[in-house]
Length: 335
Image (cartoon, rainbow, N blue to C red):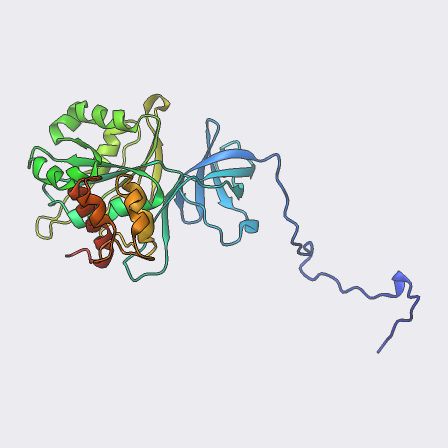
């Protein structure tokens, strides 16, 4: 075995060749200061469609991002071929800090969080008044997810020509949630679409709802030049068929805002939600929690909210609504 002395010349040191012929790995990452700003509009099997200026390009996630996910709504830094020409591919090298993240889990026992969209500021919860029947528990779960993510919820009630909206709205009156009611005839004529569009102006709105409620039909009416496939409700099961398979961000006409259409859901798990954050959506009740015991569930004998309401600081129905939402985490969808 050859040994080197104290004054070894560099020519005496044996350097093993790099068999792969690539550069040695380093922990120093390039800054990409010249990267362009982009907005992710859809993700499909590892390929991301990104809006850069007025061009739509195809990109992939750079290796240096590691396991960091990129989702619809993300604002990203992009390098490479940004021409948008056919068969060109750019690289996403940085994901900017998110202002909000809407998450869900498959069920309440699933520890794996799925990011639905990023950087939205409003959540439109679409539900049909009939065909299929409304699912209040799913609506409640979506409300919890919205409050947890810091999004303002909006109830969009479709198919009012089949059933009245009053009964369902009475159930949500104490929540103070904004809502808009549409019918199929109004949607076809454009009147309903304009009412919904007025609620979306200047916002990035994610649309959620279970299959068959008319979510994608509504999105098609809002953005007429980008038609997505729609399906029908199964007459036997009362369930719709998934026609939207991936989230897609669409600009409203005249740049009035963004609509993010998401695949229909049959469940909305809340394993990721910290119940203590839901109280932030009830500013009339939140001051009353100062007297609560540590780690109070807000639904136990020593909860200070009962006294707060008894003193007239808030409507009893508001406390009932809060406890109803917190209880959704303990229920299954079929309850």
